[in-house]
Image 1 (cartoon, rainbow, N blue to C red):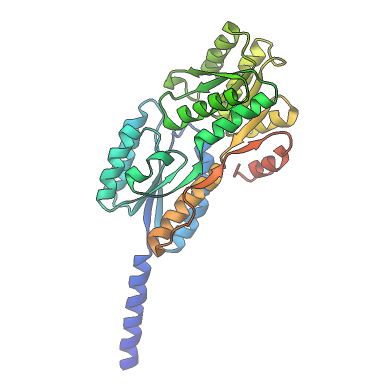
Image 2 (cartoon, rainbow, N blue to C red):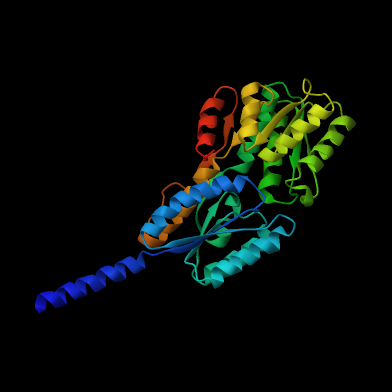
Amino acid sequence: MKLKNLFAAASTAALMATNAMAADIAVIAGSIEDGFFNLIKKGVDDATLMVEANGGSVNYLRTPNYDNFGPDLVTLINQAVAQGVDGIAIPVWVPEAQVPALQAAAEKGVTIMMYNSGQSVKEDVNGVNYFGSDEYVAGFEGGKYMVENGASKILCHIQTPGAINLETRCKGVSEGAAEAGAEAIILRVPANLDGDITGTAEAIKSELVADQSIDAVITLAAWSADAATNAVAQIGAADRVKIGSFDMNPAVLDRIQAGTQTMAIDQQPYLQGFLATSMLAAHLDFGTELATDPVLTGPAIIDASNVESALAGVKLGAR
């Protein structure tokens, strides 16, 4: 009888420990129309296996588009809080909207982990850590790289004006180009053109026709590199205008391999999704913290010298 009681007590203690290690978290991401976040989701999905093994859960929440970006993100934050999550992993793209909502979530005991964007406001929302690229450094190195490879005037295209990560990228491009002795100008287009290859190609083409001194375009997404390539082809300027991009897709890598795109700036979104999800869950479950803060997953320049290894990652759905 005594042994039975001891066994029952041990079983109860084990169950309580298991329940204590069951972190329920939300991962908030960008538009369902944005293929970049499919790579984030691959990382989230892989990390979810670990979370679920410890009895927890992961809810991946995405905005429908970028037309009402700030309010949509706040809606997702509030939705996650209402669901009773223990933690939220989230980029901050629109600080004026997101920061107050995240501060309110933190006051209710929700732990915040940052990824992809918003490193500069991590302390404002009591974030645990940041996983992603330093957007300014990425832009600076990208602009400098393009100048070192022959560009003298770069057009930097912003598809969602006002988004802190995109504005910071083009600021870096401008200052990196300037340090290398060249110039960069910024093209901001309406947010409703985000993901619109045809409309974006027309906007970029208009700039290239109006200013023949532009000899390079850097886009801030892989899909918009496709649009820039179309624009350059339509005016027969492939020999004059170099293409660079942030992020990559199979078409971008194929062009780099073929020599028709100069480079892409990789921030490794798979790692961002995997690390933000797994480290948030581990922090909640076990109290773990990383000594490195922020944890930078980029930037890395993908060009002809290393494109083959990137292509191998694409085949596995993680690049």
